Amino acid sequence: MPPEFINGVLPYNADINLIASVPELRMIYSALGGSVDPASFDLRTARTANRLNRVIRVNLLQYYSEEHKDLMTSAFREEKAFQSWNLFLFWQLALTNRSVFEILTDVFFPQYFSGRASLPKSEIIAYLDDRELISNDTQKTWSDSTIERMASKLLTFLKRLEILEGTQIKRFKTIVPDHRELTFFCYLLKAVFPDQPNVLLSPFRMFSFASQEVFIEQVKRLAVKDLLEMQYDGVQLKIIPKYDYKDLMNVLYHKT
Image (cartoon, rainbow, N blue to C red; front, top):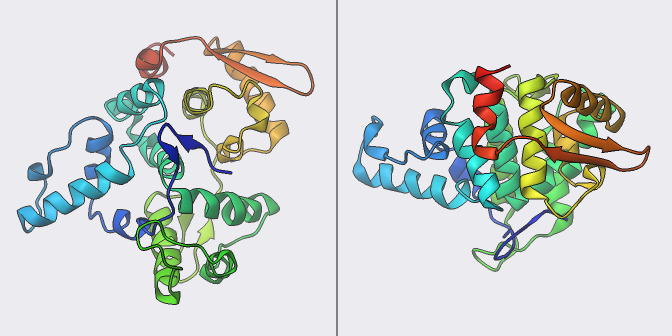
């Protein structure tokens, strides 16, 4: 099951089609950093600017807690973290769109961890066809054209985020978060799932792009760097944030 918002379970929708239509990722970066000003971008009309503004606000500027919001906002204000913004956006997208979350959880990551070279659009389409999902927007089962467009737009957007590569065939890239990105991820886990003490049971843990065994060793190294505290008894892995969420980026990019 995907995580829940304060106001209930994330809705099913095809909004990845709209998100993928945002012409410049820096529009999303700016919005996540707290600066939502469509007029600052070279768009054809005010109507287009307002539509894209709404797409970003409704779909991506959603948070599970104040800690989650503080973490995201500070990350996208830290210019030194620019090289990591695509990965941070990937994580935020998964947390704010149920359809994307489930495709990534049930299709993307199983194939990624199995060592597959590519992610065919046909497998996403088959997965959505089997689910026979009803859109919260229309209260109708998604049409074949909607499903095909969703699969295509998601793969294209994942390429823009440099999670996938290739033109006709989208191939997996090997993603290895560095210690700053992994620390951000651990704090994100705690901000979104505060009531799950054992992070190994979190449905979001696989989004670290590491196997469970590798993830445990990575967290141990972060604890040695004094970036967080951790407890591991062979079964449960507990992560205790050491810094305030608002100050984490300052610690990571200016003090380490």
